[in-house]
Length: 268
Image (cartoon, rainbow, N blue to C red; front, side):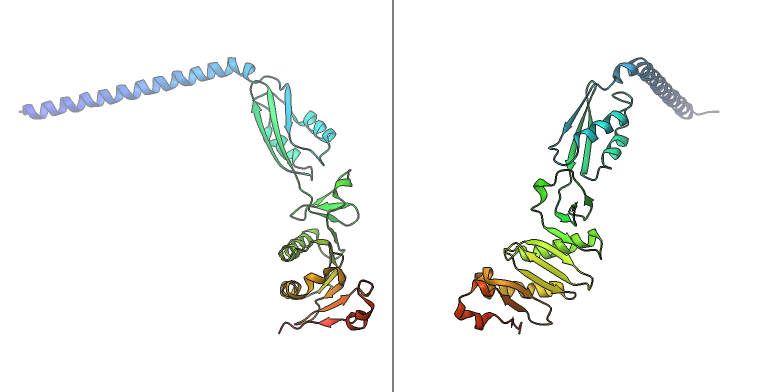
């Protein structure tokens, strides 16, 4: 004979199962009708939402990128409507221009695109007609007028990337003592030469470049800075010293015999 307690427990379990099944059925039904509604709205609303793009705005101060080039790219690459236009593809194509560093594109309701372009910044001139950005990427421009004051990097023996890397290292060292590089050259023998904006040269040689510049910085601050206009060149191609050649024409006659020779400064 079944006990009343076991019967009540069984009825309770059965009731709970029915309630759970009912909740699952209701959830599935709601989900089905929601998906059906979304599909219905998508089919009938998509043509309205995916309107033909009627305006494209460019946000940038363009100095080197040709507007005609941008116009041509946009004419060829902007296909589809407001929703269907492939913005990633458009971004990739725009960034093939060597003067474009970054591109950001966003949709503006109801039928416009907003394109933000960040141009590359030329850091130095490269050879006769080119320019380099901070990573040593080669650039070219139809208007060189505003870039002729950039430092000139010259070599036929190493890559533009390596040249830019060394330029940044040397520039940082000289910046601390108030000097700027006007020209940097790497020659066939593997030696480095710097022309400063103060119109004197620094011969670095091939090895121990940072240590040589640190040594030069010490001597510059203690002895050479006050006579910067009298210096013709500084030769750092010594293991633990340097040589300074003076401009005789800028010194008094009685000083010529004393200073016209190269002087070596020992680092101790």
